[in-house]
Amino acid sequence: MASSAWSFALARLVGVLLAATALGWLTGYLALTVVAVLAGYLAVNFTRLYRLERWLRHRRTEEPPDLRGVWGDVVALITRIYRRKQYHKRRIVQVFREFRRMTTAVPDGIVVLGTEREIQWFNRNAARLLALRRKIDFGQRIDNLVRQPDFIRYLEKGDYTVPVVVRAVYDIEVHLSLHLIAYGAGQRLLIVRDVTREIRLEAMRKDFVANASHELRSPLTVIAGYVDTLADDPTLDATWRGPLDEMRRQADRMRAVVDDLIELSRMEASDGEAGNDAVDVGGMLALLRRDVIARTDRPREVSLRVESDALLLGSEQELHSIFSNLVTNAVKYTPADGRVDIRWWVDAAGGHFSVTDTGLGIPREHLPRITERFYRVDPGRSRSTGGSGLGLSIVKHALQRHNAMLQVESEEGRGSSFICHFPARRILARPAAAAG
Image 1 (cartoon, one colour):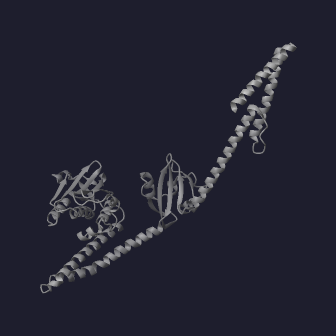
Image 2: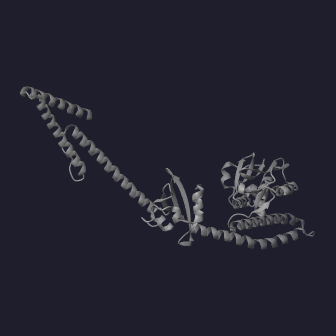
Image 3: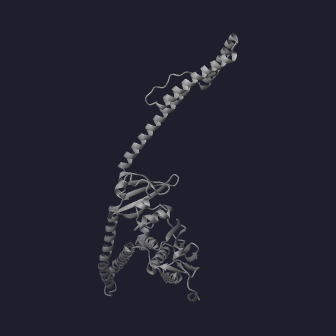
């Protein structure tokens, strides 16, 4: 279509030039005639250009000019482009309106942040939860408006996997969960959620568990005492020996559950990080191994490798709880002909403690949940071994208080490996005099 229009325009120009040449030759004024005809041809095209330019300026109110040839094709092309632009513009406006309605319906606050953490847009719930003001706070850095230290550290850390919970500036009773999601070229989406109800329910749950555990300890002690007295009575009828032994085992198991619950509640109630007592890990592990060796139901081989004499800064009680729970679990679920290896070493990344066994192993689908309270891979097996289901949960909380992490590697039927990684700042080299 376009090529045919240009061919016609070129043919017409050639025809005009031929006609001007013939007329000039007949009249004897060849040059003047050709110039005059070309000037007229240029004037026509200039007039069409003027009409096109005027229409482009006033296309909202004027109809497109009726032009032919190449100029008509240009007008048609511009009209199509304009209509396509209008369609996309209406579509964008429609999508934006739908987006605004959607974000209004979402119960969470949404804040769009630029590459410099400046606020580019936020919805009504974000304005309500973070006390943001429309128009005034656009372009402001989010860390200048939300100044909680925990949120500032969350921004600087750069790891946005786990949301951070802070108190609202306008009401300390209101707790907000702030979760950053990175997208695009350095942009971020801040999701704000009111978690006050969840925080209160969690606090009520912790208080209930702590109070119930303490209240259960006294009656359990009394019951266990009477059971022990009856079981040790030489005049007791032999038919009662079996039931009393079972009662004693169940009382001991319940007492272990209560003690673990109290220990877990104590850790959860403790604010901040663990202390900085210098703990001799090698000595502690040697005592744990000696206790295991003294057991009659232990695996055939229990080895200990202490590859560093460095001290570990932390709470001695909580570190003993970590190591003891992991070693006890390994011994408990390893058969008599199996093996348990305990190891402590230090490198540039920090200190590392591992317990590896050749026991029953853990199926892969259970690994993400084994540190949950009372979660059991095999409930029947746990009951037979007397486990409380709280050991790994205690380990997780104690490690968190030491800025450490737990790594679990296991294969069903081939054993497990539990590795605790402590940060380098919690490793203290033993003084030379003490080391000698």
